[in-house]
Image (cartoon, rainbow, N blue to C red; front, side, top):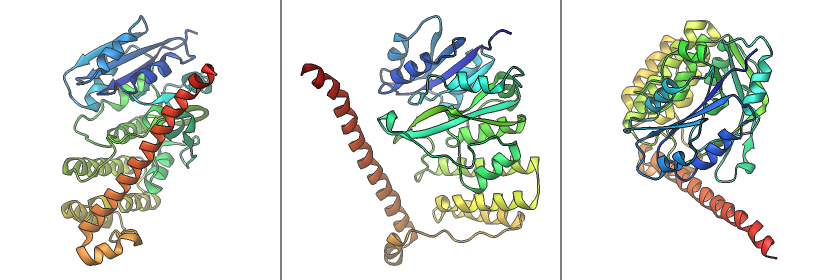
Length: 342
């Protein structure tokens, strides 16, 4: 049997700092029958120039006017030829045997409707410090159970963990270009709906680089909040199309409750829609609460100010941690040189 061709698709936008590492990670995959397709989404830095340094028979590089992540992924897929699709963001990494282990897990039958996933760990600058924390999604699951756990327990899988057959990708349809956030969550919901279930391969690993400009960060953007709510409505519709039971409706209500904090109190229109949907599902939502550390701010200045303070402090703490990790990263890179001089 001919080995399937795997297309590693890399959408890139202003990724000059990390793209070379990502391309080396893709090229180092032990699965030999592969192609790498990079689509630069109108970057204003050296992203395109760096990508072209890697061009070869196996690495093809394209560019376009800036259109956003989803449109760039759609373009990369249209340019690919693979039997299997590996999505890889321009700042993330994979273990060298990631794709090999996942395809080996399928066995000789290679059911094209099986969706393959893997473990993932997040890091800032030092990938070897990535933390791999198993969740209830780290196992073989049918589509209904996977979505129940994701939504009810507020879990997710990182984009690069998935290895998807071309047949399954085409059945799901294109990435939604109107999604300013959670485009991956919505897309892989549709992939799940078209699949026969998820096969989890624990030996395969993905290293997710947490960055300050992540699409998943909502902040106070009205357009992102609206996109997130639309994605949530679609998630609920997708799950109920598979099973509309009491346990499903309960998980959907919990899913809404988990995210209600992001919309309250700035977007009361969405909050009201959320309450109405929860009632239709047979449940009831509670008013979101703030951490006790911010209750005094709420008492003195109101909910909105307290929430902004909480968001600001989280962002500042994250920036400090990231800065310190970057310092250690550069120090560790210099150590081998220093030892060599000795």
